[in-house]
Length: 188
Image 1 (cartoon, rainbow, N blue to C red):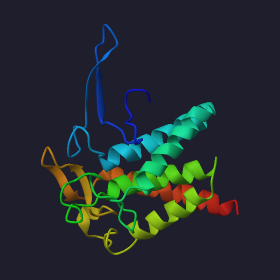
Image 2 (image 1 turned 60 degrees about the vertical axis):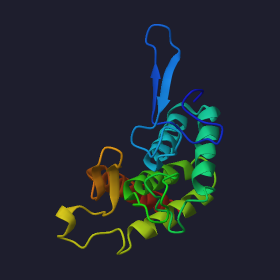
Image 3 (image 1 turned 120 degrees about the vertical axis):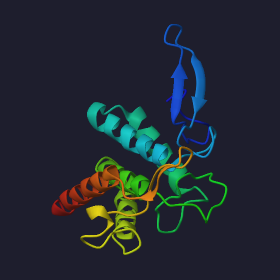
């Protein structure tokens, strides 16, 4: 947390430490627009990871950090109204940048989990994301899209790899989010 996150609560993708002395050698965002940009799936991984850390440890610092990441994501001026983020919150050509359904799926799954520990608003936000991902804009017709569920994910634009394509982990987190949503609705 100390070295991975910026003052605005966005994160770097990679922090390279000197393995002998322990100091930070460099901070970068390998799959994002620039080293100082907020790559959307990286923010999603952070939200998901700190939510799991809290679930497993009950250490409130992880819950607090997950909430800070949530606030960064959902108060970001470049978050679209359907809550499926652009591939990077700082990409230069927003709104003409690819969306990343994989980032949205990870965020939704994390928020369903987070809602079990804290605020009900997290479930409402996750529901809105899932409504978007389930729409014709992102959800493929059965038997198309290489039999993947979701369309419009981004692997790595800087590496010119997996741009506006289906990705297996997008489908995984989408399905995980659906399972978590269903479990929450059974409890009501």
